[in-house]
Image 1 (cartoon, rainbow, N blue to C red):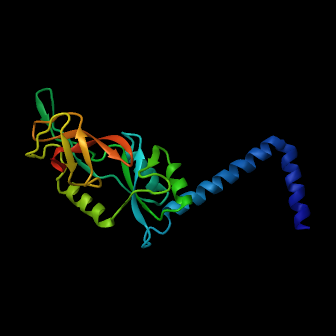
Image 2 (image 1 turned 90 degrees about the horizontal axis):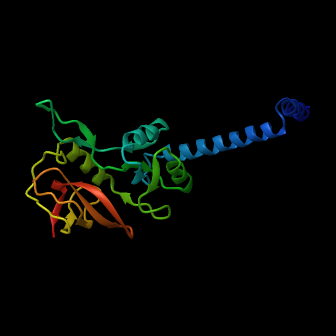
Image 3 (image 1 turned 90 degrees about the vertical axis):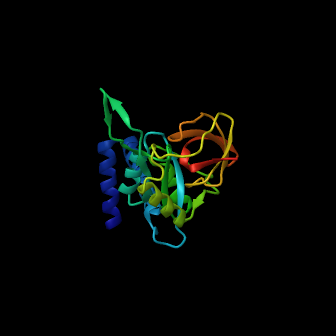
Length: 220
């Protein structure tokens, strides 16, 4: 009886909506369930010993929006911040504003599964996961904690003084942050003793330009 009633209800719905509309509704419902499962996998088991911090590449300028979207589905995400450059306006020196430390990146903690990775890569503004689908680049929890602590204490602020001065072509090593140990070449010179420098790093077989605080690098 229950089966007959369900069949009759489906037939009535199909007659009202048309076969194509019904199929579209069923397809949309399937896609919605798949996305809910992927979001759930991304947000689940964050307290598990197998959960790690990974680096999601996002559209520059949308780091905080991506972080908010991830947190909205219950995922654990971080965007380290710092104080930016002091600016003068109409003869007055304005206080520095908070800005994103790692342009184009968001830290996300989850258990790496195919379903969770699909959920991450489907999020708005997320373009890739560092290291690739098969071997995502994992960061130790203590390294992330140290990064956040230093960021909160002003270690990466734009106006922090440094003894380092570099010119284009200099070889440097990154000494702090999630990319510590990476070696690269300076793209934009900086001889002011503060601020940022753009360097090009061979990251997982691909030359990748990145903005790094001058205080985080050392000349080779």
